[in-house]
Each structure stands twice: as C-alpha cells, then as structure tokens.
Length: 213
Image (cartoon, rainbow, N blue to C red):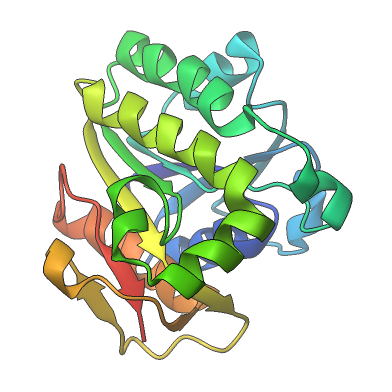
C-alpha cells in the first residue's frame, strides 16, 4: 500500500485529495496547521499538525511516504488577498530539499490557471480581474512553479480553473498544450481525481496541465 503525504490536507482540494486517495485504497498522511478540520475518520488516515514552513516538521511528515501533494492555500478574505505573500515559494523552498534528503521523487502541486506561463492564455479582461483579486498570490505561485521546474523531482503542476464544490464526475479536460489552455469551471473533487490518478499512473511528469470541465 502506497502512502501519500498531503500538505494542506484539511480543506479545499487538499481535503478532496485525502478522501479520493483513501477511496482508492491508499494510506494518507494529512499535514496541516489544523488537520482535525478534515472531519473524517479512516484507519488509513493519519492526521499530523504542523507548519509547512518548518523544515523539521516537514522532514518528519515525509517519513515513510512515497509521494507528496502540496495543496496549500491562503484565506480567501479581501485583507489576505490584498497583502503580498511568499507562503507558496517559502513552503516550496522547505519542501524540495526535504524531499531530496528523504529520497522521495514524486511531487504534485496545485497552483491554478493564470500561474506561470498560463497567464498568457488569459484574455485581457480575465487578466485584469485576476490581477486585481489574485495577483499577489499568483505572483508567488509563479515563483513557486519556477522552483519546482528547476528541481530534480518528478513533478506535476496542476492548474485548475474556477473551482466549485460540486461532486466528483470524473469527466473533465486535461489541457496539456498551451494553445488549448483556457479558463473554465471544475470541481475540487475532480481536481483531486486527476491528482490521485496522475500519481497512481505516473502520468504528466514534468507537465503543467490546465484542468477544466
């Protein structure tokens, strides 16, 4: 049985990854500041409280794991979004050397449509709205993506479009070619389905697809 570490596993996409991996028969370690927020009981689920910026905590959380999903987020409040942030790049600066030291190669990271080179696929109107609301967070996600791509890990960067809380359908588009990239709606549960499947199949290594319904 493979063991997956999910950083940011108590809410959002991270929580959905935890649930989907458990459904698929994997052992999961959910790492978050408040992992009890997952509100799920399963014999193969381990809850670990910790800070993704703490090298010792991250190194300990990696022990015995086969792969890592990073699904960190920031509060969706206006004050939080208005402030510059480096949480994504700072956490990545901790995670990459910790994974290398632990001998763990597989990393799947959630950023979003508009991060990195996918920003160029946005329309002018989309880019204006995106920059006004999410610009500071996504500027750091772009730095995070560059750090991941420069690593020696077997990485996959996952860029979902507009997120919903709808149920998992298993029907969504995985846009790998820049010419196909576009925005769209996708459920957090379907993003999690892609992540777990990509991990299981060893697919989309060194790729950064956009996910939409």
